[in-house]
Amino acid sequence: MTDLYTRHQAVLPDWLALYYEDPIEITHGEGRHVWDAKGNKYLDFFGGILTTMTAHALPEVTKAVSEQAGRIIHSSTLYLNRPMVELAERIAQLSGIPDARVFFTTSGTEANDTALLLATAYRRSNQILAMRNSYHGRSFSAVGVTGNRGWSPTSLSPLQTLYVHGGVRSRGPYADLDDAAFTDACVEDLKDLLGHVRPPAALIAEPIQGVGGFTAPPDGLYAAFREVLQRHGVLWIADEVQTGWGRTGEHFWGWQAHAASGPPDMLTFAKGIGNGTSIGGVVARAEIMNCLDSNSISTFGGSPVTMAAGLANLTYLLEHDLQGNARRVGGLLIERLRAVAAQFGGVREVRGRGLMIGIELVHPGTDRAHPEAAAAVLEAAREEGLLIGRGGGHDTSVLRIAPPLSLTVAEAEEGASILESALRRAG
Image (cartoon, rainbow, N blue to C red; front, side, top):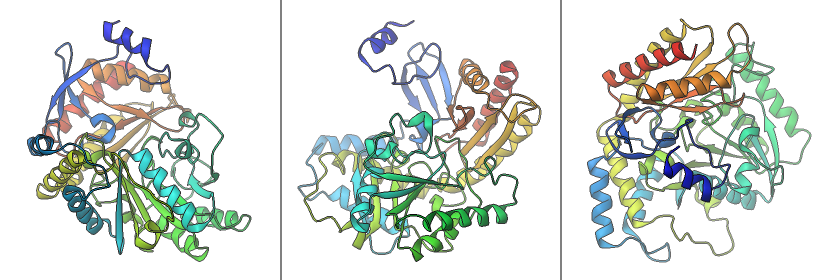
């Protein structure tokens, strides 16, 4: 046990989870690699929970942060802020939402909290629809709409939440249906639910569920939902905290796989846009964003330093077509991992899009989650120089793979080889 670990345990909450039996201290990074305090080098396939989106120590971002910090670090939203306006302009244009307004926060949790505030104020309702197996953050309101028992520590909430089918394709009562029938069944369930309750304020949904283990419905499900929701005046909030900025490869935003009925009324974002700096935010139609009838500011949202980082990071992402790289390299990695998984009876499914990939582990020959195996693979991968994540609504038995979007083919192959070895060792 390291001295730092002992100090951590003495002053930080017991529920503040750490990976690994012998937790590591990451001291620095470069590109797709990080190093710990003992000098060990790791290929990073988790990016600080999908947050180091482009690369560690990306020169363009560190330069922008340094230059802005040398001018002014903080001013608050009470003053005009050029980097904030410039980033908001770019995000509004990229969002696909007409007449968009952008409000910046410091995290995805706060972004979702703000979206729920806007929805309930605009619709004059505290009833929210959410997806089973979902995760939307750790604030009091966000855990109140989180459909994952492992991440929802209280049943108390300022919101009345109703959970809808559809976020998990391969489990649940409709899992045996084909995609079209699955979507139809989920839509009928939604219609039935809305027939029994007063019209809710909004549906909040991740296009691909992150903490839930990178599960997703068939393309078009949320478009079909939106047709039903619009008839009842219910808003659609797309939680893009993990799916945004091209990570799925096929689309810039996850909602675009469900675009037949138009864009969402609101989308929330965070994580990757700051490449490690604290940026979150909400994009909404102007009439929704402007519905609040009392004062509101953000002390730290839209900080000049984080906005400079976001601008530099977004520019790099677009100029280097990292969405295209996620599609190409991610596609190769998924196929490689599926070939690996075919060797092991304990792998139930390899799923995902782009560089957002989940490997679900079960007890061989059953459909029963195997969290002990997931923990063993996590440890074995670290010992061989690869960092990955864990998740899943069924006893956290999913390995989460989400490298920086600049991942190379050679690094993808290296990571897949380590995972193959780790799965074999974990047995």
